[in-house]
Image 1 (cartoon, rainbow, N blue to C red):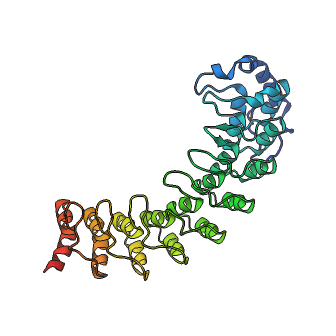
Image 2: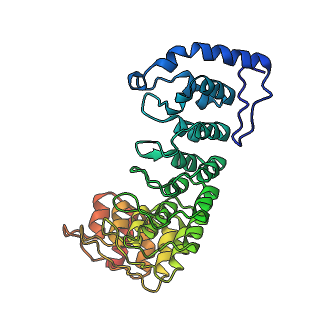
Amino acid sequence: MPLLDNTSSKTGSSDTNRPASALAVALTLVSLSTYAGQQDNAERDWGQTSLFLWAIQCGHEAVVQLLLTGNVMHVKEMDGQGKPALQLAAEVGYEGIVRLLVEKGADIEADYNNKTALYCAAYYGHESVVRLLLEKGAEINGWWAYKGTPLHGAVWGENEAIARLLIEKGADITLEWGNPSWTALDFAAERGLEVLVQLLLEKGANVGAKTHEALHMAAKGGHEAVVRLLLEWDNVDVNSTDWYDQTPLSHAARAGHDAVVRLLLEHKDVDINSKNRMDGKTPLIYAAEAGRDAVVRLLLEKGARFKERDEKGQTALQLASGNGHNIVVRLLESKCI
């Protein structure tokens, strides 16, 4: 076994049984860390890693503990990018090291670019670290300007168990991030995470919230099961428009998701000829322009108006012809006869 074998567990087991030879090496490393310990964080080059931070990233809990015994101020160390030690530990997921750092006084809310240790653990899927940080008082709705709250992070990282845990512990599912504003439900729908979408809906997420992004993103991504779930809720608006004034049907048609298009057309309130106020295009025009022959055929069968023109005066047939979509051209010409 290597002298510095990583015996620090991601579930917090100690490494007190480490062979004496490994401890001897660890002590040697401590003596070699004098310069790193004296080096001012502000002077550390971009990307340069001290022995202490290296031990954290590699999961060497015994080395971390020994270094802290020599100088407890190591808990305040940051890497060359300004990322705190606790955040690094949360990213790699070693619960024992995270616990050690917190107990030695690490700031649980310290951040790098406003991203906290809890967000990191939630995004990277380290459930035991998330539980520990919550037990130690981490702010469950702590905000990161680039990707929202820890709940956003858990959903973005597709970590269902952690998302469920955060919700059970009181995470606010209504908080929005970005421009346009996205909730955790919007993130889950965009990634096609049916189980998480179901969970968030059951916990009260509003599918009819102001920007209606969830249905749009699910339709755009071709996530049929998620679209079906969202359409089952009473307050959903199947003809709502998003930031780009497109409806879910326009998104699905343009992307060529015929199964989702078919599903949306089954809704009693869907407007098959909805027109974008920015460019004047209908779902049929979008599909024809992109060469989505299966979608074009379906829309024509359901009665879509094929003579509609966009803001530039172009019809679906003209756009399909101009882009060389011959199958679509023949489909549309058959309607003109």
